[in-house]
Image 1: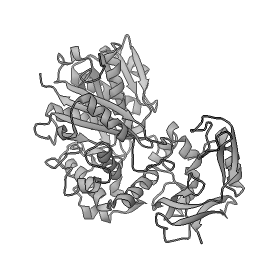
Image 2: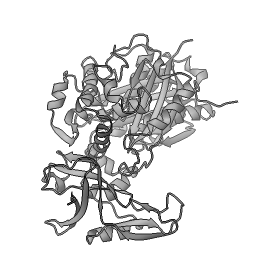
Image 3: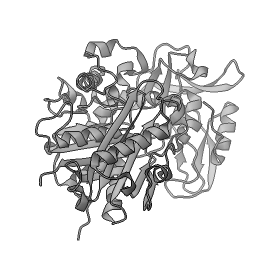
Length: 131
Length: 386
C-alpha cells in the first residue's frame, strides 16, 4: 500500500505534522475550523484559509484496538489502539494511542497528542493520557 | 402528475455463478460477461436486446465490453455508480429512472471479481471515496474497513449498551441460513459462543463479525413494465428506491453522529414511494459487510428505534421464521461477498417463491446496500400479483 500524494490544500498540515506540530485549517473569512484540510469552507464556502496551531488536547470519542492488520509497518505493533478524539478546538482527530500503553482510555477520557520519533526517524503523532 | 418509480420497472432476470475462495479460472471481465449472459437468459431476453449497462465502478468490465461480447447493436445508456457496496441497489434506482424516461427497455447490472485484485485493504485504498482516509488516516494506523467501521460500533455500544453478543446473533442467523443454501461458501453452523471465542480483528469486531472475501459474479436484468410480463419468469416489481449519504460522507471520524448511516435518509423516501410500511416487509436482504452494519441499518431503516438494534436481533429474530427474516441466502457473512448483488438476486428468488430458504408467502421485500464510508441505498421490491 502506498501513501497517496498530499492534496494541494493540505501541504501545510502535512509539513507541520512531519515537524512535530498539529496545524488545523481555519476559514480566513468566517473563522470556522475544519479537518481534514479541504478546498472550501463548509460554512461560508470561502476558499481563503489560515492555519492555527492546536494543542492536540481533547476527549476520547471512540476507540478501536487493532489485533490483525496486513499492513507491514503496523503488524509488529499489534495490538495497538486507534483513538477518535474530539479536540478541544472543535474538530476530531484520529491517531494511535501510545504503542506501549496497555490500558485503553475509556470514551470521555482526556488525552493529549505528542510526537514520538520512530525507528525510521519519522515523528509520529500519538495520543497519551492527559495528566 | 406526481412522478414516482413505483412499478416503473421490474427485475426480470437474475443469476449468480462461481462463488469460490481464492482465484477463479476466469478473469473478472469473463465472470461479469457470463453472469450478465445468465441473467439475460434467465429472463428469456436475447443478450443483444440489452440496451443499457450500469457497469461496476472498478472499471473491470465496461459497458463497451458487453456491446462487444453480446452483439448489442445500439446501447442507449451506460453509467457507473461509485458507492461501493451500496452501488447495486443504487443502480436499481438509476435503471428504473432510465427506463421510466423511455431511454432503455432492458438494463443490465453486472458484478464480478476473479480474486486477483489484491486484498480488501489494497482495494479500498484505491477507491476515490477513500482518498481522504488514505491521505489523513491510513498513515495514522487505520487502514482497513473493520478498523474504520469498528469506531462506529464502539460508539454504538457506548451510547446504547449494545453488546458483542448482539453482533453474534447476526452472524449466527446468517450462518444458520447458509447451512441450507447450496452455493454458500461457509456452511458449518456456528453458535454465539463460537462468535465470542473467535479471534479479535479490530476490537470490538471479532473474526465472525466480518464478511468473507471471494471470487464469483452476479447480475440482474431490469426491464420496462410493458415487456416484463411477457418474459420467461414472473417479474419482481420495483416499488420503491432511494439512496442516502451520511453527514460527513468522506470521513467517519468527523461525522457528528457516528451511529447514523445514509440509510437513515433513504429509508422514508423508499417506503413513501412504495406506499407500504415496515410491518409489510416479509423478508429483508441487508448488506452485511460487518455484523454491526446490519444492526445499525435495522435502526436507520426504521425496523426499530435508534439504539434498539441489540434487543431487536436477540433470540434468533433474524432467522427465517423469526420477527424479520434477514438474508435467507446467508449474506456476505456466509454465502458470498458480491458487493450486495447477491442480496438482490436472493430477493428476486424470494419474491418468485423459488429461494433455497423460502420465506412462506413473501410478497414485499427490502434490499439494502451499504458502501464506502456509510452511503446507504434501499429498494423495496414486490411480488407480481397480476
